[in-house]
Length: 347
Image (cartoon, rainbow, N blue to C red; front, top):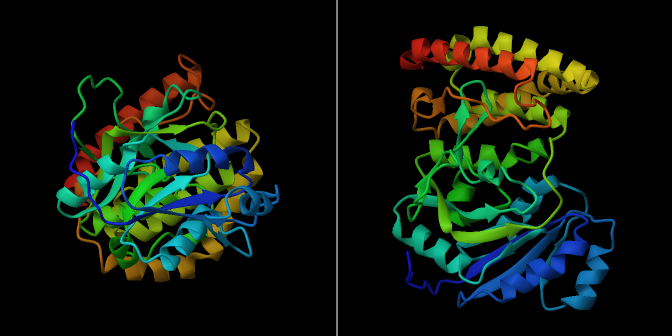
């Protein structure tokens, strides 16, 4: 897409902020330099404690700000923007993302021309993270883990269809987002973007990554997410989106996965977090089942059509290459893949 046709429809750029005062100026200035003809900026601040509010009022008084009365996490801030704006397209950005001048133009070209597209994701570039491609599109393993796209593709198409993308930079069609219930604030941190995008995918919409629409992540290097949220939110995700039949069929491998995860977190010193997360899953089960019932009415895809079996993405900070744990993990992947080939037709 060398010369994308420019859409003239107004777009809201919604910045999610929590204690991001050091990054906000560069983020806002990059948005103001966009070549897209009609843009408004709105910032949802999750009760920052670093003086973000006062700083914004002094340096960018023209920018609309929503000051939330509690920290509702990224999902809550995005929902606040969804409810506030009237434009049908919203480009959500984390507070440490900067955009290139033609990014929004390219994203709007794709979302306006590819039918049933509800989400367009720009390519995230990150000088601090050599594996940033993991955030630029992937799929979901049947055990509720992330399978990232390959990084060895030389020629990239105009757009790529994925089941999951990062929420750090996300152009969303507002009506579609509201149709599936917006972002689930109970996740608070981690998985909230995957849950949102997958609900759109399973409801029949398209989720696209646009390789030539570029944004830059200029924050600190990404590390391992907190174990508590990783464990708890994965169960939230599976209990909401999987069919009961699928959950029963994968139960033997789920048991193996949980034992392995528990042992790994024990070694890493996160044993208490593991049990706290599982306890909360049990305590909040009635609420999760209510959300499950509401979403299952919108679900159009069978689990066999979107769940996969492949190598699960695991950060190097957890498993180092050629370590005994890495070799054991490879054996586990082969076992999980073989099991999925047997049960996939039944899901």
